[in-house]
Length: 239
Image (cartoon, rainbow, N blue to C red; front, side):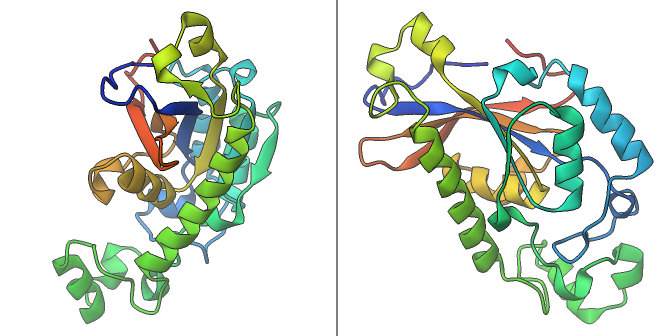
């Protein structure tokens, strides 16, 4: 879906549309565990069935509408990508592994509630670094590095040398906007959107198999903006 609302950005270029999809559910997800980069879980049976059903979800693009699918190299993302889009060209982005949760990795609330470090993290509304884990700053740096790689490739897909200029957008040009998908972790989606679409990290939480679609824009200074955000979830219809 495209909503052209950018009245003050007619000189911006549109590189394409990207569909961010969170992977299907794993056993650890169902148990409320912190499943990060040290937990390479497979999808649960329930997760597999739910992901297979997404092939008919009205809020996801058809395989023929995608030029490429990017994904985290972790098993749960590779399985999800293969089940939804077996026929689409795929590329693994190493920098899109989930964050390492450190002492919390593999545990859930019931197992951690007596841990003073965990209680301190909870009291901080989950915004601090994970004890003995990967820092949020390091995680953000590598996730954005991976996204830069995707943006650089998408620049080669768009018509012309600089993408599709909004000031000269036609109906035909709208149809020519390339689509890509990204099957990744919730933390990856939350990081990219909070940096380039505005808002806070927790504004972009989504359930397994859900996510967001948006346009990738470059302003005149070649700065990335993600606009025209559309939730991808049950009950949301593509326009």
